[in-house]
Length: 315
Ligand code: NAD
Ligand code: AKB
Image (tube, rainbow, N blue to C red; front, side, top):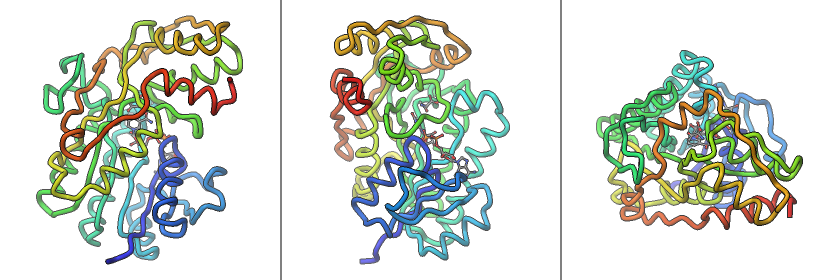
C-alpha cells in the first residue's frame, strides 16, 4: 500500500494547528507537511515539516506537492464570515481560487484524497431555523456563505466528472483554546471564555437569545479524520455533510460558565455580526453523517464548558 503524505494548507489557523497535530499522531510527524502564508507556528514547532506557501500561487503549490510527494491535501485556508464582509472580493477570490487550485492539481496528480470544509454559513434566512436538513432551501446572504456553497458544488463536480475523492463537511461554529479564531460570527463563544478567565465580564457582540450550532474542537478534529478514513462507498454526499453537536445562545453559555465562576457577568452590544447570525439556522440535522459514516458527537455544552475552563486554567 502506498504510504500517504499529507499537506495541510492553512495549518497555522484555528483548525489547522489542531488538525496537523492530530494527523501527525496518526501518520507520523514527517508524513504531514504543515503549510500557511504565515512563516511559522509556535505550537507546531518541532513536530514536523513546515513550509510557507501562498495557496493562490498555483505554480508554487504544484511544485511543493510534487517536491514533497504529497498524496492528500487538507485545504483550510479561507476568509471567514465576519472578515469576509469587510472585503467581499478578496474573500470570494481566496475562498474560490484556493479550492480550484487544489482540485485542479488533485486531478492532474491523481491525489488519493482532498479535504475541504464548508460551513453552516451556506444556509440563509430562507432555510429552516430548526434541525436544518441536509438538503433544503439554501440562499446564503454573506460572501463567505456564497463561496462555501459554490465550493460544495465544485467538490461534487470534480468527484463526478474527474473522480477526485474530495470530502467535505459543514462545520458549525468551532470552540477551542489552543489557537485563536480567524474572524467568524461564532468567535464570541471563544472570546467569552477568555473574558471569564481574565476580566470576569464579557460584552457580547450578539444578542442574548441568538442560538447557533456549535461544536468543541476535539469533536471537529475527530469528525474530520473519521470522514477522511471512511471507505469511499460510505460517502454518499459529495457536496458537503451537515454536522452537529450542540446549539446554544450567549445567555445559555454565560449561565453555564456561571456554574463554575459565579461572579461572571455578561452584557450585550450587538454589531453587524448580529445580521449574519440571524441569517443562520439555530440547529442542524446531521442524520446523514450519523447514518452513512457513523458520526457521533461527544461534547455537549456542560462538558465543553468544563473542559475549556480547565484548559484555560480558569478553574
Ligand atoms: P483561520 O482563519 O483560523 O485559519 C486560516 C489559515 O489560512 C490562517 O492561518 C491563514 O494564515 C491561512 N491562509 C490565509 N490565506 C492563505 C493563503 N493565501 N495561502 C496559505 N494560507 C493562507 O480559519 P479556521 O477557523 O481554521 O478555518 C479553516 C477552514 O474551516 C475554513 O475553510 C473555514 O471556512 C472552515 N470553517 C471554520 C469554522 C470555525 O468555526 N473555525 C466553522 C466552519 C468552517
Ligand atoms: C464563522 O462564524 O464564520 C465560522 C463558521 C460558522 O463558518 N465560525
